[in-house]
Image 1 (cartoon, helix red, strand yellow):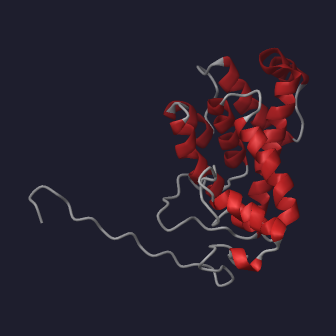
Image 2 (spheres, rainbow, N blue to C red):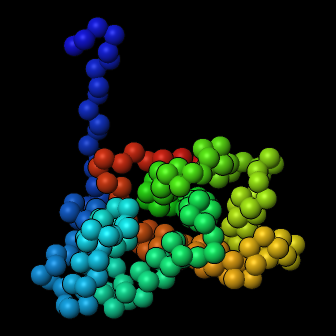
Length: 211
């Protein structure tokens, strides 16, 4: 071993829950293309194709949805629109996704989307505000609004009139609708991930603290 270089310790092997399939890392088995009907194969080909935008391949939401191929088409269409074509730019979209993942403590969503958020230019200090549930002082108006918007909705199941008014001022009515829909979309995914006990991929390090 070269002098001054510390030996790298092998990453400890994770022990999967007994009802989790090692191929899918969830309670649902990983479906292969030949097991699917025509609708399922179309979804499979999109997810596995060269223009796929999935962050984790089939070992995650895209593979889970294959167990209901027709539903997968509707869900994917909504997700792709909200993530890539809504009024919000990509940086703020990833912020909204992280807020959702943090408020629901979805380790899988957070660990997938923190690197994506950094890639889209979201500053680490803003990510830390969400991750560590810190106050919003010092943030830009749009960033503070998105974080506060999500915290209110998920914690109180309501949105204060003043928060709504500020959101409309910053993003317009369409933007407010699409922001809420984006958070709802990823909240639904977080619930499904929890239901099937989706595990992180072996090469992933958990990025969301427990508390």
